[in-house]
Length: 283
Image (cartoon, rainbow, N blue to C red; front, side, top):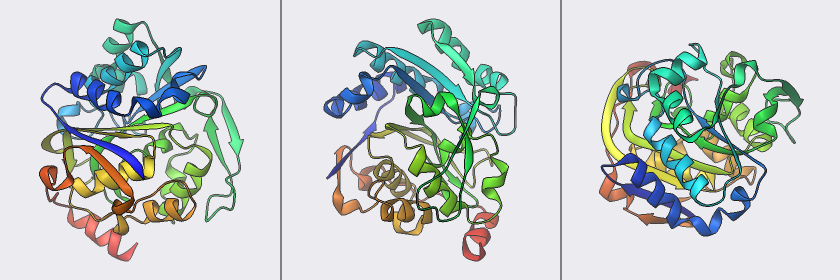
């Protein structure tokens, strides 16, 4: 059984710290690595209150836990898709977190890139990935939100921020490409920021107050729980099913042990944009 923490709380830093403490027994390998990359999602330079970008308080909870439990070299890195990455850091308050804990901030768009070849590819035969991401244990810290093409954008799709070319991923067979990417860049730990989530689509700016943190070391399971609390069946998220078929984790809720709150206690039916419904049906 994969363990996933689903925790509700009013203080994001404390809620995140408590959630990770609940699965501390799974985190020893991550804490012992030489480099840990905390990877939030800053598709643009919007404030987290919009439901678009990762809340800096959740990132701070992750950092505080890692440092309190012997984490060595901790970096915070992202490669924004539609903004200057450091401007996105500033708007979200990530620069203040990095300064408070004396951590290095990295724009992955300006990193060195290494060409990788996913095994048994479904669509992505090769891609260029930021060297820092490949050489670190990655903690994926995405926003809880819907997506026009991928249905949901959570810890797995968040790995696209480490690519040299993000746009090419969206040019057909996105779900297959995400599964291929995860085969070579799989998060060691996933922590979903569900404090203020986003319905509609990935940049619509329709915030939903949820006060949730979802965490676990099986990113497919974490994303399955994240999808479920938004009212989306994991079996309807194609990249989750493909990742499960590749042996990268499970999206079968009957095989996931959920700690903390239940899905039933926290679920809300997120409204999808018309374009999202159309693209999912015909895409």
